[in-house]
Every structure is written in C-alpha cells, then in structure tokens.
Image 1 (cartoon, helix red, strand yellow):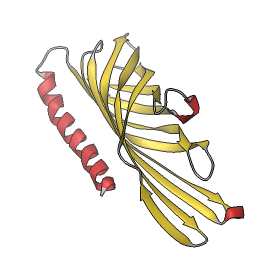
Image 2: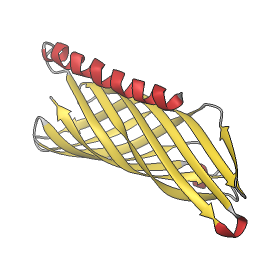
Image 3: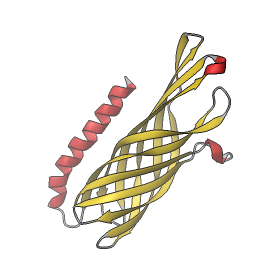
Length: 189
C-alpha cells in the first residue's frame, strides 16, 4: 500500500510540475525544475544490536520558485538486507520518504550553491526471518526535520546536482541521524 502511495506521489509530482513548467514560463523569473536523484544514506539500525549501515537511495525531486528562495518536494525509497548466519537471522528493511521544504541559494552562469531545510515523513517496513519464520513490522510514521547543502554545475537547461542532507532523528545521538548524499540531473529552466 505504501509502495503504491510513494509511486503515486512521484507520478503526481512529475505531472504537476510538468504542467506547472508551461505555466511558470509565462511568469518572469520563476524556475520549475525536476530531477531524478540517486545516492546513499547512512541509516541507524536498531536490530539485532544498534549499528549504522549505508544503503542505496533513489527518487525524484522537484522545485519551483526563484534561485534565492524556492519550494521543494522529494519522494525517495531506500532498502537493504542484512544476514546474520550465526543467528540464522535475516532482516530486510524498506524506507519510503517524502520531504517538503525550502531551498535558498545563489546562481552563477555555470554553477550554483544552495541550502535546503524542511521536514521529512518516513514509513519503514521491516521483515525479520529467524530460523525460517518471517515477521513483518511497520514502524509508525515519523516526521523529522532536515537540513543540507548542495551544488549544481552545467548550462541553463540541464545541470548535474550533488547534495548532502542530514535528517535529524535524534538531536542527542549523532549516530541515529540519517546522512543522505545524492547526485541528480536537473532538467528545466
């Protein structure tokens, strides 16, 4: 169900921003941009003992506004699998995320830098297989603040982007916070 919601949100974002692109071109100076993003995140794992793990992340990000201030939305998915042969234990985890926030930066002809901040909603589903018996659990919805930095290089219509973002899940323990690094290709004007 949540997988369908994530896909629906991604498709809806693409459709809305494609339609908004034509509308925004009629407004002087407003930029509407869409970019697929891929990367890795460092995620905190509570089972079987607390640790962190790097896992693959992919999704889509869209922004609308001016270079100095714009709104952004991002839908992404990350999943991983861990096996503990000595304990006959396998843990598969999938995290679906939606970020909504603001972006601020400054542009140069072939490069720009930006800061981003907002909130992230996350749904986590975990399947644990212990001695052949599988149990699926779903964590309650969590909403956490995020902040990050990034840069873009390229021309006026296509740019390569890179960003590093921290999702603050626990202000008292840095190892419990997620660190996401992504790259993407931004298309739009």
